[in-house]
Amino acid sequence: MRTTLIIALAGTALFATPAFAQNDREAGDWLVRARAILVTPNEESGAVTGIAGSGATVDDDVMPEVDFTYFVTRHIGAELILATTKHNVNGAGSIAGLGRIASSRVLPPTLTLQYHFAPGGAVHPYVGAGVNYTIFYSEKATSSLNTALGATTIDMEDSAGYALQAGVDIDVGHNLFINADVKYIDMDTTATLRSGATVRTLDVSIDPIVASVGVGVKF
Image (cartoon, rainbow, N blue to C red; front, side):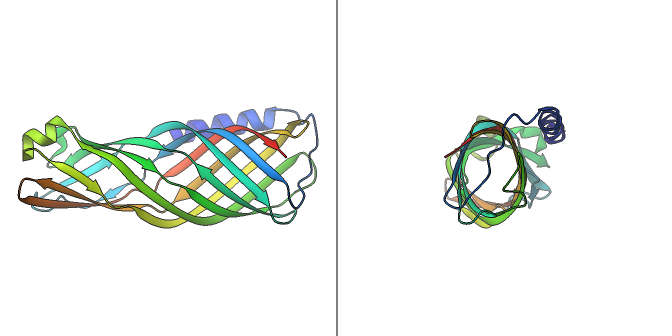
């Protein structure tokens, strides 16, 4: 629901905003953007080993993000995004009653190669594809999980996958533009839960949609 809302608001803002300037893209140009991102996982979870019918869900998060694009040619750009988010993990199925069972911070640097359809003019749509490497850190079990399983530590494996992207820049001033962007990121992890001598695992495909809006500057 929140993903649909942010995309709708972004589209309304972009197409209602007149273009005040025209900043053509050329080889050697840099774009620097500051955006607000909504990360919405589309998770599919296995069961916690040894706990029949169990599973997990992952909450959304909204955070600021900074990204950089370098134009190799007028039509081809390479974009690197840098952001970190925090996500809560909730019990599902037979452990739904535990509520929130863990949290983790996520650092998902993503590099995409983009094709820009209209480097001239004031409206610059693009599509992209690339790679993502996700680092999970500061993983913590909640008190409800510790009560259910005993004192538990959690470690989540890092993830490597692909990323797909579509977006648009609209020029609104001298070398200034607004942006809307949406990405799909292939992201999977295995969480290892250690409770004393007992080791359990949980496989989760997170596969988030990352919707963003923001402003940028061309150099």
